[in-house]
Length: 326
Image (tube, rainbow, N blue to C red):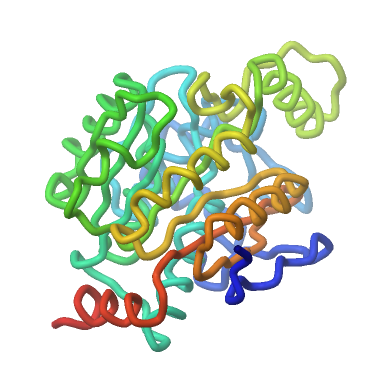
């Protein structure tokens, strides 16, 4: 059954821009960042037009930059990740959250629902715990973070424990069933206002390595260089059987079982050619709404796809009970 209320897909030639509320439109203020994390200073150098920058092919420099941004702009006093785990670019992660806030706003009479009444689920929270950290600081939301990797969960918990007050806003849950997303994570009577996910993009370690090599070659202007993944990432973060398309299709199928537990499900879609297949899968299971939003930073472009099973009556009950009950 095709959803009559599904939004038209965004044309692929629409060039995305950073969200208007994103803090990171301007070049990084390195002198200020260095005051928060002095270890960053040796990695700062002069770039184009005399502006300060770092070597974005250097994993250590990126990690220190993230520490400084989180401390200076988001009040996160402690943040660290183990070697070889994903070190996410913060501007792009902030964008996803701002667009989710817009989706909630457009479902709530033009007002962004904020505060501890609003709960999100980050599927694949990772060792970095970045979405819950940013989402709580930006909008006061509560978060559940899930992951199949016990090391990632342990490190994310260390970040929470290292920042006073976060333990009452972010809870972590291990997903013991590798091919599931919501089962055993969302409890039977539990309600979450949105879910979010940055799925593994690649179908194999070899594919992930080749993609990273191309990215680093573009950054460094070299060919065939022996390099590490500049943003890190292990198996569960970067690749899975069937790649991004299969991962998202499996998530869509399982979301139907939790259709009354969540207002908006969402995920990033990195590859444009997967979008048509994903939309068809959503229409086939009879969702009430589909939203597609282009997102991007620099030369990288992606898209968010969000879906809801709630009809108008169920949506109004949800809004009035959870978002406007105070």
